Image (tube, rainbow, N blue to C red; front, side, top):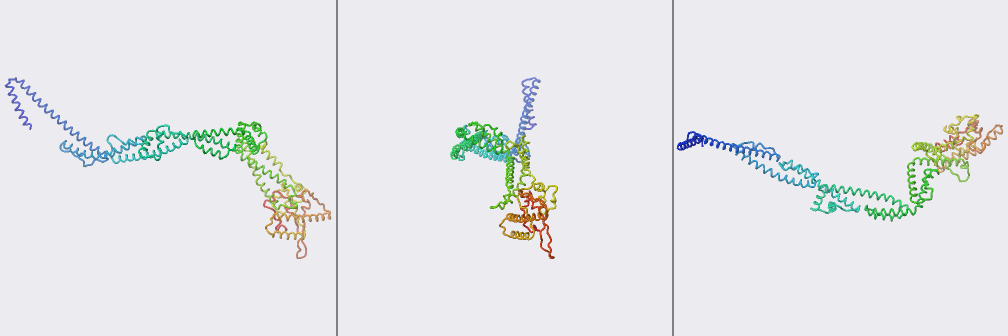
Length: 629
């Protein structure tokens, strides 16, 4: 109906209304009021209808906007961008057509979202299953209740978290099985058992268990702080084990010495150890009982053990060079009291002295070495002071001189070194302890000083003759066939009293004959020792020297010359004037038939031996060709 038609209809109706009012005889004012009221009602009805239609239009607009928002949200949750070809970018001629078109697209995208949502919810279910056991490990923040993300990245995160939880669950199961094994071993070793419900479940867990029963037990033992409780229990049992082991080792440390001291058969105590190798209360009780039994046996033999320890104390006192007063400081060793208290005091003193020996080990070794060397020197001096050791008849020792010289060289090398080290150690000991190191009650450094003074060599009668003012010759005029060490030693008086014959070369054919004889001996077999041949040569030269000496005395008596000869009590002291005077030996005739005298002087070999005699080995120069020129 058009507006003209509506107006025409309303005009007809108003005419009819006016006829009726006229026929009814209404006044004009009443007629006009009714007409205005009718018009007002018609306008109000039209306004209401317009308002209703406006609301309907707004609802369609809102519906379209919601559908558009839903479509965009689905694309976002699916992890996809909104395509440019989607219908939300295009509006139809009417709102209803647009809403219908967008509704169709929303349905399609929702179906795709629901398909992926089902997969994600399954992943949520698995993650929740692990979160029950691994509440402190699983990341439950990946799960949401609204707008669940079903994008590929979100699904990958869920799968990775589930995989991580599965690995952790398997690791905890392995750890749980190790804990179960360790806990069972501790229970068996300590003689204990499960006390709580969870510990009983843990006892049921063994490698042969499988299926749902094992999974249920593991899940129950992994829930909450059950695993922490198990580990805490293991720590308590380990501490108990250590305490019992310490106690057991402590008792064993007492048992072994007692078994050895009491002479218990090894098979007997090894059998005891085999039957009591655990850490239960019963095993420890057996150890305690065995200890008490051995202590009672030890008390019965306290006197025997005390005397045995005293013998060991005497040995340690000797090693420490204790004097009588120092030994008497330990009074229990000089009483007749024999009981556990006395035995314990002896054993403590023995342990103290053993530690003292260990602390003084270095200085004790040096003192012992020094005392040994000094004793060897005294014995050597006593031996070398006997002149008959080299001149005796019968069985002779061909290597004696060589051994004596080796001893001199060794003493000359070792004794100064050990003195120096020992003096430093003694001074360091006195500084550190405040008291000197004593040997049998006397400071050893004083003993060393006294020994050095007493062993200082005194000048011999021969040395005194050589340093007189009226000596008619100078040592520097002597033959330099030996090193100057001898002359210095001779002047100092450092002469070893090793008897040697004064070697004097005779004159005439005897010298030539003796040279030929010695050359023959040098060409003999090398089986005879060099030192033996030197000794034989010395004996032969002794015969020649005595004959020459007698001839010289006869010539001097005949010529009225004064001769001074020392007594035969000291073999190392030669006649003074005859010793330094040159001797003339005949030589072979020259072509003219004359004989030219050859002057023979005494070399340093004719002196008694000093400290440097054998510095380079035994003197063998007399056996060479040059020794007779």
